[in-house]
Amino acid sequence: MDTIVVHPTTPEESKFLEKLLKRMKFSFEKVSEEIVNVSVAELNSINKGIDEANEKKLISSSDVHAKARALCSK
Image (cartoon, rainbow, N blue to C red):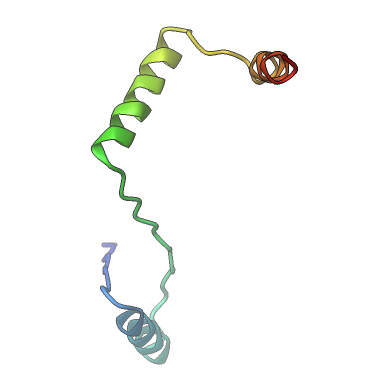
């Protein structure tokens, strides 16, 4: 069986389609999508982090906390 994906552009369209499908007794699944917009600088930072993770250059949370405590206690 085919699946049809519909992307309403407003909350009103979404509510209308949901009511219509219920009234027509169609089986449907409601899935919420969150679109996240990031700047070029943020994207570059994310990619840098992924590269560092792939190169095993990550620092543990406990090490970061210890360094922060040492800096703050000076």
